[in-house]
Image 1 (cartoon, one colour):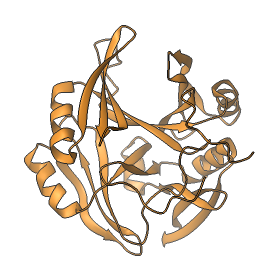
Image 2: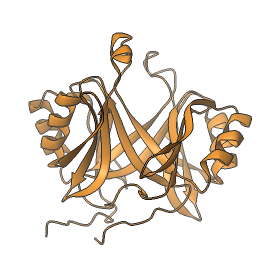
Image 3: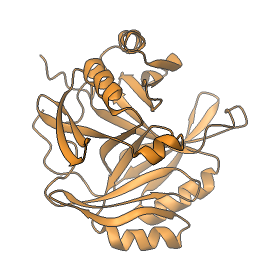
Image 4: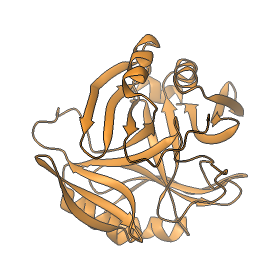
Length: 269
């Protein structure tokens, strides 16, 4: 697939890992997904690592600050949404009940961002691209593929994202559950699912990032060999594919999906 050089506004554009053990996490992901890496210094013994597929940027990671490690902050993936104007939307997000955590601020040589928690507590970032629009590969194996919001208040989440980003929301049955499909100009962007009483109380609202894979079973086996943990074993979803939820050696949770939709291009063929 041709290299991605721009991303549609109000759609996901980047994935970033904040890790309590940068070195172990870098080894895990580069071996699991066959990624390359480019360590860019951002301080004494701190790096912003570009994770790459065939030398194209597809995600990033960095070592969390020592005070965060000491405070036992959980390693986590952060999803970025491309927007036209970060500053305007940051103000609008606050008026809709979001809490600003960092920014808005410039990222030299890349763009402008703000990180916030939405009204239900899920972390998300907004990105106004300048020199770096975001991921440079999509709809291929071993790159970010899909996003899913787990919320304890579906109505509040729906109201926030439809008002802030103009997302269209459609309630869709899936088995015994109901999901909300978010779209932009009728193009699917993300799922929204309700966190029911069956969920562990320790799990907070969050955006889950899914990486596309060729074989869910094979990837789960490899993750375990690399000291990863299986949170949800390979599970089939009708008309979607097979997914699993994993955590890396530093505790960051992510998902993989073996899609049956036919939209994944095998770049190795």
